[in-house]
Length: 573
Image 1 (tube, rainbow, N blue to C red):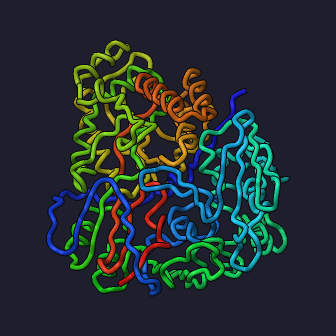
Image 2 (image 1 turned 90 degrees about the horizontal axis):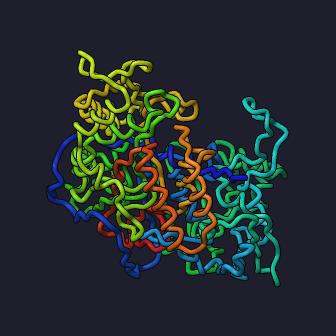
């Protein structure tokens, strides 16, 4: 029996809500600070400890528990990863790095898969409670989706999960979390092998705090106990560098250095997140010394404005959020591989990249692999040869081979399935996606394919299947298992209902393959098949923009874990 993988859907869609500018312009510096683009490297400068730093926060959280499916937002993870400890930290290159101040781990058996964690004997929560086996067990229990509630799914009649976890990937493969040889050793045994095991237990959740937040019931605490409008901040205990000490809803959130932290302490005394939810106001906040660091939406006008502010350094990078178009196989036209591949031939992806992400950074490129990004050594551009350039004649030939004839209106039609007219859907408002639609609409018309504006106010269309072609984004990179679930027959994010038994088999193999080279080969085999079947068309990585005052040291872009990934090292002059 195949295992159903559930990938990190909500976080991906949350990141997909951001608005990116579609205005044209150039990338010339117009004074002000230094601008860099492309890949990121970290150069740590030992700054004097102390001081307060203000971050311009763009999306205020609704709960401190971001691994809850209803509150799974990127901005929450940006600051809570400084509060709740993680076994692994991902580097700017996407490499998993053991958080050795907190824990060490080792793959002690491959069959069955067993991972042994050794927690620092000094590791405690900020209220003095030790970080223990119970916390690891609770993290697993709340994330594996196996415990069921008395409520049932109205559509299936099946019991709902007891905990509303945002993502069960990996945790559902664990069969036990038990004590090892001493109080600081924890043994995790897997029922099914899971190649991305290093990404798990990040974060670790404080069981006693969830119980307190739920009035003695950790399930209630998980669901609602950390909502910002009802939370007792005393329950937001810290096991890392900073503690949450104050919140002014709609205005600010304050993190102070956690004096109970056993490792190297956070450098800053205090980090204040000032909520500026209108991104167009963030350059003014930087210019007026009201913010020291900003991570706004990458709108071209905003980028150029920020680059012109004296004393501000900026960085444009391409992270793990990538755009793609998905086909719905329920549509009789799109059920034909000839139509899907004809659309891929007719679209000039290079023009789309030139008009959109290349406005931020001319190094932007077409994405020709769904599994890996161009900066990865595993990246193979499988779509480059056949789909690297627009081919209108090739698109028309494919349609005609499938029985389509060109109508007097310039649009192809099928004798039984009718006119080749398709709905093109994206979550609106989003200027970048609207411009993508306009470009694609014009390109496809050249090949006799009609697509119509079917923009939607939210992402409900993905769950209901109410789309023909959907334009949206995924977040990938740190856990390949979460991303590849998009393409398995029973994958929780397979919105278009694509199915290929060979792909299913290769994906299952890749999830259990512990050798990285072999796994890379399996996933590249999957991508090769996907270019033949064409359930989706990858487009490009979305540009991200980071700005900081030149009196601040150690700010470093990280597309895999967010811009606060090393905030414990930040310093102010």
